[in-house]
Length: 199
Length: 199
DNA sequence: CATTTCATTCAAAGATCATTCAATCCTGTT
DNA sequence: AACAGGATTGAATGATCTTTGAATGAAATG
Image: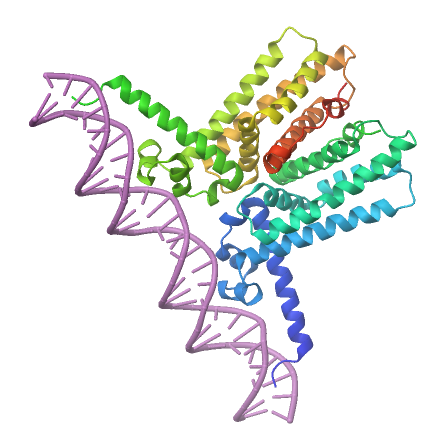
């Protein structure tokens, strides 16, 4: 009666992850439109047809990656906001953590880049756009809330907290782009530069 | 003997500008690969064939736009650096000017976006990449030089000036992206937030 | 060892585009 | 009015990709 269920499930999970992982690499540096299914297949070492066994279309892969990107980002943010720390410490940890992550973790920078591409491009699938519309506010609101807390107790600079959160993410995002572009040469700037906007 | 030279030249100049202008709009929001020649032609109100009367290829249009983008950016930077102002005033003017420009001038934000896309994507024409490699350092070096001047006289915060210039452009760029994405809703953040990194 | 069930491949069909080119139009000039 | 010269059009060409589906292969089960 063929292979048993668990083995098949494992094969499928692994292939799926493999396709997603290679696609992230390609989408983030070449964009959705310039990434060919044949690119994905060949870097993953499989045939083109097999890609369609796992995903309905190229755009489906993209949507899945966007979904994962926000899941990671938002859950990190929520963990941060729940930490038993002062607002000032939270911001400090967030900036240092994000910058360090950019420097060490290629994949994370790629996720940032993917999100940036998805935000910019009018040609991303509607479903991806919908996810962005829905999720983009979460991380910004969390940072803004921390900033407001800090402002109340006087440990964080005055100013419109929403605008400050916007600049916060904008800067992180810009640096992520730089990281992917510059590759190994990339050296994250001193956290103090960014922190001086808030503390 | 047909139309006279000047009239033809004028027609050609105008058409060329028109094609470039519509292309900037499309490339910046959809990317090079997802922008079809038929899109450019139809938004410019001309036939597909005519586009090829003015440019050798789609990539040629892109390269021309990138060339123009850096020309604008670098010349603005050089004007700034020559102004008879203190370093502190120069940075102040640069930040306020750039933010205001983002808010009022759709086209400028699009140029920033185009540069970002060109930097990110591995599939932009080699000639565009070459221009980027050559030109990208200019504006960064100019800002870094102003910062160093200011640090010498104590009016600007200490810190690695190159890194600070990097964060400077990164933030501007990130905001430009946001501007194009958010369109009319976009409200530039208070300049003071960014300025607090430097002053 | 025959059989079943899927993963996987391969080649072909269908779509979508960039690019070309022969024909047409427009507008000063003679 | 006839003409010249370039601007302009639009359909055809061909290249490139996505997607499909029939055929193959491998592993586990009876």
